[in-house]
Image 1 (cartoon, rainbow, N blue to C red):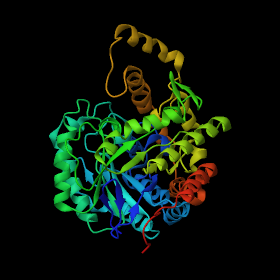
Image 2: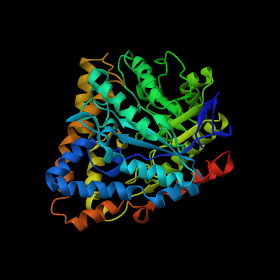
Image 3: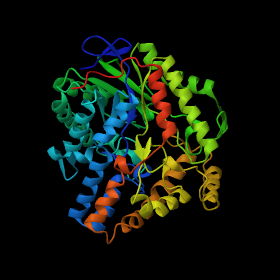
Image 4: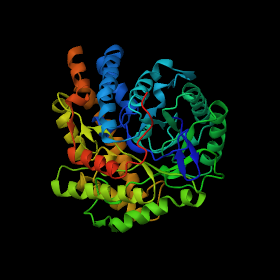
Length: 466
């Protein structure tokens, strides 16, 4: 049943309130290094794998991986937990090629169509999230950015392509009631904040001209934390915040306790949430937390604290009537509700451990890896450039991004791809199938926590299955 915004709530076509609560399908149509175990950014990884396997066999491997990663059993599991929404991140490369801009790739929709249809069978809505835009809309790997420059905001060409792509997506799904809406720009990072607002004005107008009915889910600037860029409240729009807890990061401290000099407890979590949702509450628009969720370590006591962070956040969201989308559904062990199995983990396990030792993945880094080697560089930057505070997160993070998450990560690419050298077609298929649900292990305490929360407040868990 088609959703729309009515004041501070979403409602279905009968006027019944719907609070969207579910998960993000990270690492699938927009692959991420910590989710499937590769280094650097998706396009660079795919290029390295193609160099080893050739075009045809690389296509065999990646298409099988996408097929196995999300199937009917996954849709059934999520519906069984009680979720009513799945946010699907998409890389623009599926729908458009850099060497043929403005030409929509019809075949690129096949997996997205499949997922939307399977979830609809269970009465579960989807939000289509463009996670990687042409030119990269933010400074990090998850926008498929091989650099630290968000060129999307510097070149009108990239913006034109994004508008054209969204016109095609909106035209395709305009009559699909199980698509809850469109999340056109994940975590924009416009350093000056001068381009993103006018771009949203233009994009909203273009999408509405094609599809006037679907809800728009718009992220604030600076990774969905700054809503001052919006010059008006667009009709039928949800303004999306992301709400990662400081203590829940890989470098997080005890909970409750200090993380990087800041005390984090439940009261601090609620203050942060309230600060990040001031715009929504002042404008009387729905609150939806598009991403949040802690990282797990394997240490029982630390993970117990991480589950408590999540439990506290969910209770805070419930108290404020906020919808949410937990990051993320499936990965190789850092955050997922379920985690990939064999033979992928055996083949890539040592490599994933090496990445962890080097802190090559931003999302899994404690910022202390290779400390002896990097400490002199950090001291040099702090001494020579004490006022340097680059966008978005400052000097310490910028140095780590440039050295660990770009330089070291890119140096690791040939090693990752080389682990596929000599694999037969059958072996490639088996590696891809390691991400099928029946090969995965389930993070049962996390699954139980999510199901318990949804059962405690079962208000409108979805629509009527087809």
